[in-house]
Length: 324
Ligand code: DGY
Image 1 (cartoon, rainbow, N blue to C red):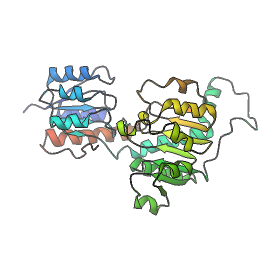
Image 2 (image 1 turned 180 degrees about the vertical axis):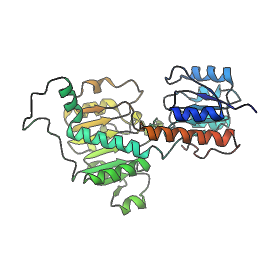
Image 3 (image 1 turned 90 degrees about the horizontal axis):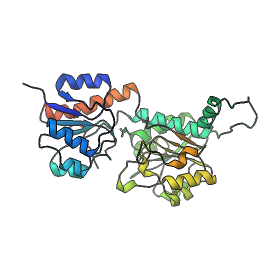
Image 4 (image 1 turned 60 degrees about the vertical axis):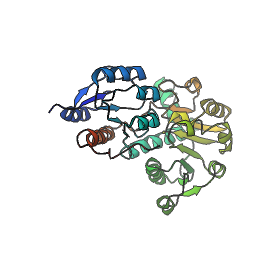
């Protein structure tokens, strides 16, 4: 029996591509850049694949999904986030969408911790200074940051990534507060303080770490009004989705000094980056590295293929269906 056709929109880790090639006739994207809607439609119409293995950045919007050939029986994304896929349009076509939750929680929390440390201790500025050969030697007042011990970390979105970050931050002596759809018994048991309003949450914290999904409901969640609720000198870190931050408002608060620093791993419309960040010394910028470890990217790929296998090899529902 011939292998089912699987369209790969990106280059995936070698172990993932090897497993995909074992069970499927894979159709690669030679370019390894996010595919536009028309590119996905053209490739899918030409090959008529049974499944699409895609990633964040691919434009699986309503128009694209509506134009996919009848052959497509699963869209599996190599990501936890699904904001690049119109889930309603896929449901309307009866195409299951599945993602890769959980396996990237620790890796992403590590990047959040890296950004918190870099922002608090001015790691980005310091590295740029040394690299530019501008360091003239140790000085008592040079590049002074703030100590994390005893500070309050506010976690927005206490899912698995938020909980992993809470564990790490406790090791640095930080107190944990969180804002979530509902209080979590496991977080409370570990001494984390739940807030049921943005006002009490933002006013109680020294560092805000954002872990909410992208999409219309969360667009510009961190706007000028909420930034004003943060304590003077607060730090903002985002490893969720760039669309959740109003970049102009964040830049203005960094420039005015209301906020001490920010650390960003995700950007609205990435890889384009809001111009103001380029010239802001107190922002640490990373290129969407949250899940970028060898172990995690393999695990994401295997989980994505578990989803594909369930549908295409066994005729079952995917084990990790995307939820809205
Ligand atoms: C995810 O899995 O959503 C990460 O942001 C990588 O896209």
